[in-house]
Amino acid sequence: MIKSLHKRESELANSKRQVEILSNGIFQSGDLPKFKDKISETNQFPLKAKKLEILQINVGYMCNQVCEHCHVDAGPDRKEIMTRETMKQCLEVIKNTGAHTLDLTGGAPEMNPDFRWFVDEASKAGIKDFIVRSNLTIIRANKKYHDLPEFFKSHNVHVVSSMPHWTKGKTDKQRGDGVFDKSIKALQDLNAIGYGMPNSDLRLDLVYNPSGAFLPGNQASLEKEFKKALIDDFGIQFHNLFAITNLPISRFLDYLIASENYEDYMYSLVEAYNPAAVANVMCTNTLSVSWDGYLYDCDFNQMLNLPVNSKAKHISEYNEELLEGRNIVISQHCYGCTAGAGSSCQGSVA
Amino acid sequence: MQKTYYDPADLRKFGKISDWNEELGTKFFEYYNSVFKEGALSEREKSLIALAVAHTIQCPYCIDAYTGDGLQRGITKEEMMEALHVGAAIRGGASLVHGVQMMNKVNKLEM
Image (cartoon, rainbow over all chains, first blue to last red):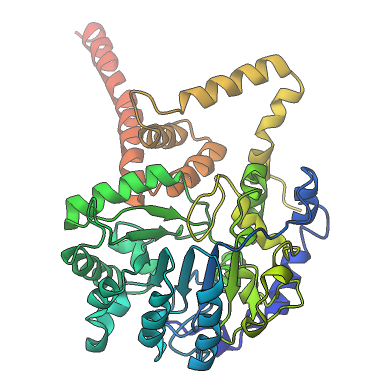
């Protein structure tokens, strides 16, 4: 298993260095336009936050997997974990906000020792769509996690899980040896209790990230391929596939640079720029909360340590009036969310 | 700087061929884009055909383009390689089938 960039003390563990790379080179030379200039062409700068619809909470960077493309740089060696105290502050906001979606992510959110307590409490708030982003293998990682499908079901949790391909080779290459087999078993466990079945209210969606330096294809076509392969080969069913573009951040940025794909990838993102996707980028209706309670426009900005442009900087200072209408903090990584059909944690946006 | 006949960056400039003849360039790209739309064949099948043809005509730009296109569509490397062998088999077969002409000629000329 590879180590996180932080553990390796890589220069890319430093978010400032990442922002520098994204701001210099081909963007400084003018070979490619900066994101700000690109969206200005269609009078979409500055991007403004609308009413909050999705509260995404990162409950910690610890994970049982070390995926090569991970923008969080998550792994077993990451110790950043949200405390119950911060969770309580989040709960106050969850209870009072009009957001229709609560989205728990990580790392592997289930590894936070207070995860079940938090889900218990948060599910009482009556949020319409309560998402947990589960990497699937955690369900099979240890006996103490084997009952997670039942736990999710009892809290009507919407499970969103990563699955980069319907073949073992491609999946294991991106996510680690053995991940495919464990993921298949976990999906079968979820199916067995009703998750992902046609007409079932127990939502099971899959997330597809390309396993390399290329953009995702058409989301509907990929979903068709995934559904056919998973049902034919393993009898597995799921509801929707979200095709998500890999953003040039953290370990994926490290991979792009090491494989000498960085410039070509950035060209691909810029060439696929779609102004129609800008109107629906997730940062305009989402707020991302870090493990220590700080607020960001999205999970990617969180990893780049680009906090919200607002006086309310921490979940304890949450204030709808201060946050709504704020200018979204942007850099060149934002091209990842506006390429082609656009990309968000809920898949394509255009 | 090493100079070669092919520069991968030129692929990105393909659209510029219209600069010198807008009418024909536009017609070509309209036709090209229509060809690759889903029809009796799926876009996925067309992508694999394009990849095989790219190799038989040995077009480096097309190889880059349709390898990337295949990856975006989730096409596996096993499928890509099988498609290439179809192209290679046809190309090899095209050479070999001319052997019949050779045989006919030999049979006609030899006593």
